Amino acid sequence: MDVIEAIKTRRSVRLFSDRDIEQEKLDRIADAGRLAPTARNEQRCRAVFIKDRKTVENIAKACDRYSWVATAPVIIAIYADNDRKMMCGQSSKTVDCSIAMSFMMLEATELGLGSVWMGHFDADAVKKAIGVPEEYVLAAIMPVGYPADGGEPKEKLPREDFVRYI
Image 1 (cartoon, one colour):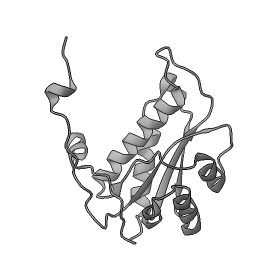
Image 2 (image 1 turned 90 degrees about the horizontal axis):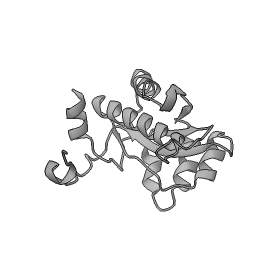
Image 3 (image 1 turned 90 degrees about the vertical axis):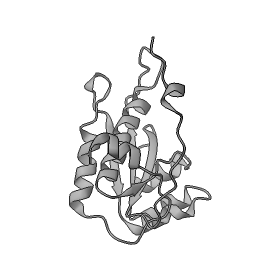
Image 4 (image 1 turned 120 degrees about the horizontal axis):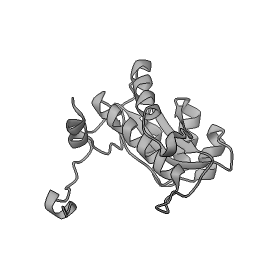
């Protein structure tokens, strides 16, 4: 699978089978995030791959009404410290974590895994559950696993509505 195929076939999966993810696949996903570009190559992002069932269940509780999160065999959390505003006004932490998580999501897709990007969670509760210091920014979490359903393809804007060439 090439990158554009992974982009085209990726779906937000919200129900996972109980099949464990092979360690080699988790390592490849971790490498995809580790190798992602960061502002000034500061490499401040860190990821936690949560496999412990009790911790996964605690994180699911921190996701409010999304109890299906507990069906994921792994939840990836991404966070960073040492925030600064880039010249464009954006947080380097949030941007760097988002790039790394996107790379990991695409690698998961290539490996036949489903995932979903989540921002609907109690960040303080998740940080406490996984031991991330209070002053760090937890940018996102991503449940990952073998899909129990394929996820629904979403309609996307046509290219001519998305891009302008000047």
